[in-house]
Length: 114
Image 1 (cartoon, rainbow, N blue to C red):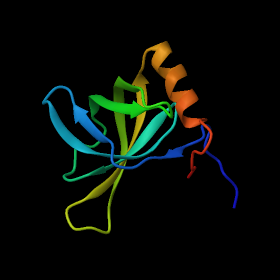
Image 2 (image 1 turned 90 degrees about the vertical axis):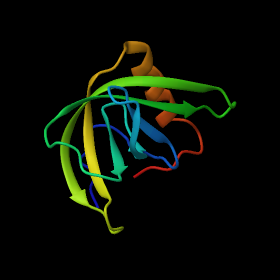
Image 3 (image 1 turned 135 degrees about the vertical axis):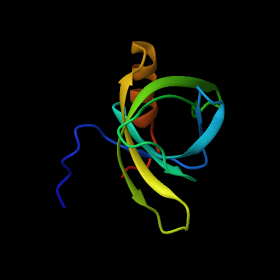
C-alpha cells in the first residue's frame, strides 16, 4: 500500500480536544500530524467551519504541554459507534514553537503511525 499523505501521522488515544470558544470537549484525538488531526466526535460539527481547539500532549519524560490551534474542518464520516463521527481537520494557525513541538512529538521513539 502506498502512503500519499504529506506528513507522518501518529496514532493517539484518550486525549480530549476542547473547543476554546465554548470551553466544551468536542472529541478525542485519534491521530495527529504537524499539519492536522483526526478526531472522534460525539456530535457532528458544522461542515467547512473554522475552530479554535486546545489539547494537551505528554512527552516521554512526563512533561505536558497544552497546544492551541486554529483548525479547518475538512470532512466527516459516521463512525461505527452510534452518534459518533470521524472528522478530519487541517491546521490553519499554529505557533512556530508548537509546530516544532508537534513534529518532535510525532517523531518520538516508540510512536505508532497510521
